[in-house]
Amino acid sequence: MCLSSKYPDAVPVEDITSVTVVDALMQIFSRMGFPKVLQLDQGSSFTSALSTTFLEKFGIKVVHSSVYHPQSNPIERFHRTVKRVLKVLCLESGSDWEQAIIYPALFALRTVTHESIGFTPAELVHGKNLRKPLTLLYEKWLDVEETEGEPVTEYVFSLINRMKRCQELAISKMEECQQKNKTWYDKKPVKREFRIGDLVLIFATFKSNKLSLHWTGPGTILRKLSETNYVVQLPGEKTTSKVYHVNMLKPYYKRPEEVNFLISDLEGENDEEQMEIPCVDSNPNILNLKRCFKITAKVQI
Image (cartoon, rainbow, N blue to C red):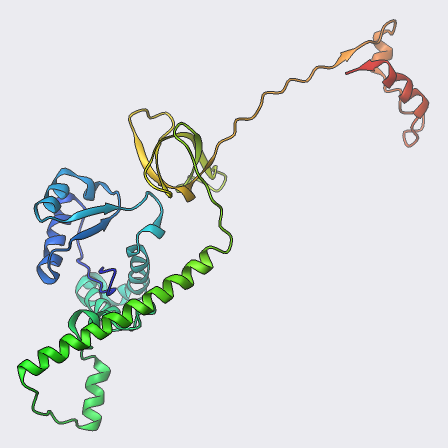
């Protein structure tokens, strides 16, 4: 997905091996061109030697998002939207869902106005809105006649001016939306900062059952990449380290070992008297406070 225009694209695949991923990326690049920067997660299909070499050959800079932190990768929100659409419609299409659903779903997402930019993704990419079924119905009802188009030169210049104006409005709308989201996110900020060598607990994203611990560790901070990303050495794995967002970490405090001693100074008392409970009178509902104070005075802690 293009982060500027929010223009989505998808290719249905049977697996996510490196070869399959490279082929899918090549299909998208053949339609949209080769990007300068590509943001990916840290999946093995994106960090393999084949994928890395493929992207380097075409001069594409790769930016990896933090582990288990979908907020740092906007494509995750698009995945959630696509999954919701597929979940509703795939049962009606049977085994040919990739042909009957995925492309109509992409068409709908490309032609709907995006809240953060104020335009449809197709309008920012192609310079005009695509003809939709409602457009066809509107033309049929009104019996719109085709008019002779303007000269090519005038059309090109008008298209350039229109796209430039749309770009300016989209940037303004995006900045407004970002400020709105930032204000909401910063209502209860908790600043965390770690130094190299600090012990931290890591949020457990996968739990085997409901009683599993929410935090694992402790891990060790190896390197600080930025204000929000840290390289953490996982517990029990000296050769393995991962990049975690600061929201996934919290300080680890080792509990102090406390030993309590009880020293009794009851001399001259037999075992039978030590075993009895002197504070209880014959009536179990009445306490003999005088005997309680006497026994307590003989005990030193």
